[in-house]
Every structure is written in structure tokens, then in C-alpha cells.
Image (cartoon, rainbow, N blue to C red; front, top):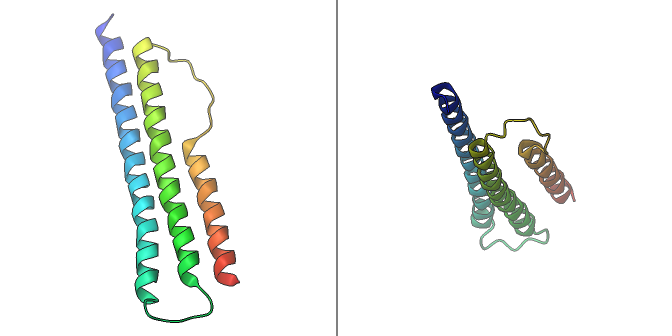
Length: 121
């Protein structure tokens, strides 16, 4: 074990920590946004008897954001744990894997389409 190898491991661990913290911020934003959508629309339509029910649409969209945020956080924690295990083993070979950012982007596109169609109809 040389000092340069140990310092490289520490830099890799610090980078993995920063990545996890970024995912925590992103997930928290998604969860908060989902909660906010539901609460704001519920407050706006409180006491209004309307045939169209924007509350159910906003509730479903809000729940989707909360679910995406929670699943992204769970997946980020799992990926972080795997990265730390790889660093400890010294396994630095590149392995292709599905990007968490891409999965979250696709999920948000689907929620956006769902919201668009729900509001349009």
C-alpha cells in the first residue's frame, strides 16, 4: 500500500460522498415539490365545488414526485454503498451501468406527460 494509492482511494471516497449528497438534495427537492403541489392546490380549491377535480390530478402528480424522490434516494444510497465496496476492494475497472440521472429524467418526463394530459382533459 503506497501513500498515493491510499490518497487516490480517499479522493474517490470523497467524490462518492459528494455524489450522494447531490442526490440527497435532488431527492429532497422532488419530495418537497410533490408535497407542495398537493398542499397548494388543496388550499386553493378548499371549499370550491367544481365538476372538474384538479385536486385529484395534483394529488397524483404530487405523489408521483414524492415517489420518484424517494426511489431516487433509495437507489442513490444503494449505488453509494456499492461504490464504497468497490473502492475498498480496489476494483477500479469501468463497468457500464444504468444512469440514475437518466432513470429519474425519464420518470419526470412521464410525470410531466401525465400532468399535461390530466390538465388538458
